[in-house]
Image (tube, rainbow, N blue to C red; front, side, top):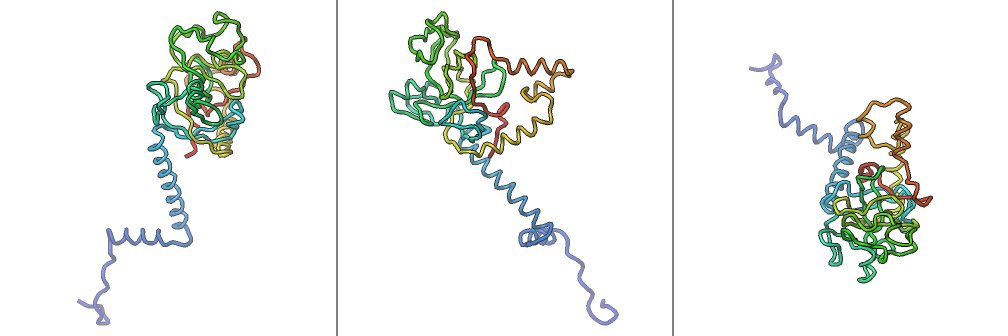
Length: 279
């Protein structure tokens, strides 16, 4: 059958895979308009995903990067630095504490193992008994359960004349004694944390990227201004329905410093519950 003018009828429009291929081709070759915008967004998202998967494969921990929130590790780490970390049991040196990838400053000085300007490993840890976010400090030495570690410690980093006057001495359990490079006391002396159990170690710091962490910190601060209780974790806020008076009490508890702690003591921290991801 032909049209009235004698020409054969027009073919029906193609459907299915051929049409889809046309859309993909237009998306790939678009130089302006909505398709170009969609293509750029998809390309950026895939690039971020690929980098994130690569970093996770290398580090073995998520998030693989954390932002430093204070100056307690200066001059080797600064507020706003972005730090790449690896899992607490990955790439373990021969001198590391058994079962971990952590080399203490005590051992590192003997074997010339240095990281971030000092002997030993810098770790990210989260003491579940302490309020606040995880902390990034140096692992100074390892103590065994029941050990009197007073004589092993540097007297400059303590405020006691013997073990009885020293917090966490003798050690109630085995763990790491830690310290910020810019802090005057061990964390376990100043009340920042108890001896750090290996399972509290979230990662070992490997690479520092200056300033890039400010992106994450700025975003966190912007989000904090929209909530009434900035220092308290999201989980804590959602778990209870608090009145204004209770909010004040929670803030005071979350930021409380023991009266025996020397002031000021500043801690380098990652964002709450490891949310400081910039991958």
